[in-house]
Structures are given as C-alpha cells and as structure tokens.
Image (tube, rainbow, N blue to C red; front, top):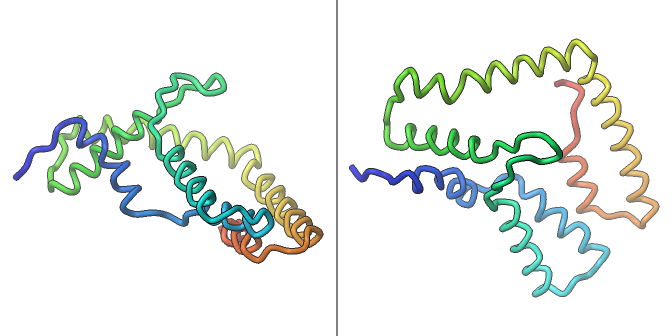
Length: 160
C-alpha cells in the first residue's frame, strides 16, 4: 500500500472538493447575474474559473475580523479523516479525540446559546422577510428565473 506524505494527506480535502463539486452556488450566481449583464462567454468563463480558484485557495490568515481563522485546522481535520477512511486506518483514541472533542463540545455550546437566546427563531424570521424582499426586488428588475431558482434553493424551510 502506498504511504501518503503529509502534504498529500493535507491536500485531500482540496482534491475531494475539486472532484466532488457541491451545489455550485457561485457558478449559478454568476450565470444568474449574466442574465442581466450579458458578459461575453469567454470573459464569463475566465471570471467563473477565477472565482472558483479563489474559493478553494488556502487561507493563511491568523485573524479575520479579530477572530482566529482556523482553516488550516479544518483542512488538517478533513485531510486526516479522509486519509483514515481511504486507507482503512483506524486512528488511535488520542488522534480521534484530538480531531473531534473540542469541535463537538464547541458546537454544542454554541447551539445551546443560540437556542437559549432565540437566535434561531429570529434568524429564520429575518431570512423569510429578506427572501420575500429579494423576490420582490427581482420582479421589479424585470425578473430573473436563474436567480429566483437560486433563492429558492437556498431558502430555509419551516420544517427545520
């Protein structure tokens, strides 16, 4: 079995993202705004490529708006999890705890605070109002089926 270098392990999340694209919201937004802007196709292709490259670029920031930017830790975690999965390697208890305990505890703490303060309800209400406003604005601008589809795709449903 081929042993991966540390760099290969850390690049696994990036390689996975490139090989398994998600909803392509950025590309769909570019196409939707092009409905109005009518950018030449060769230039639009370049714009789309640059946006995708920037989105997947590594971020070496220590702080972003005064908050620690821990993207490298996210990549390490994802890289190690993909490595363990793909090589059928069982991590040691210490490795597993290092990759999961803090993030799980932190997420649960954040969820409890958001529930206790009513943040989820407030956010859902705000998003519903904003969504309605966006649909109205699109209509006043002459409509845009592509953009309306994106708004619907991103819509928060009441059954959450």
